[in-house]
Length: 160
Image (cartoon, rainbow, N blue to C red):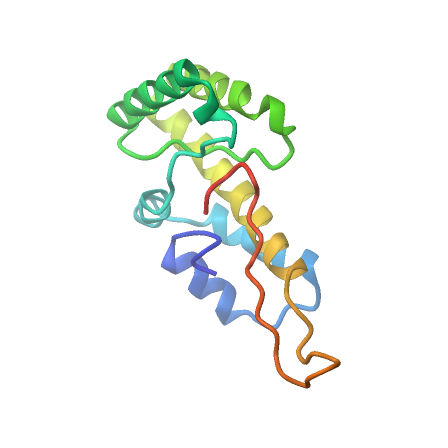
């Protein structure tokens, strides 16, 4: 669970209430736990996040430079990494969306930004949980009878 959200309190809360009957119940519990994060838990989760870098950002040196500068300004202003969920954004629009989000959110006050960052953390956690659950291999391979191991898929636009 810590790979979905870096708050130990969040992960412990989800683990303590398992098993969940289905993915929707798990996602609802994840949302609820996310809403209940204390400021310290939120800081812990944000400390585990890196700036999302769309795959095409490196191809555009000016955009990459602007992204790094905006992120640095954001971290200086708010004291934590910028988080944004890009799961529903088309690959060709991810960089523009990311830059626009950074630019827009730099104008927020600390409390307003804390609320937005918390919402983005919840969205990131939901996407990560969903990808984790949907990518779980069957318990046993039909051919060999041994457990398969596969990597957990992350959003192609948000490093985890």
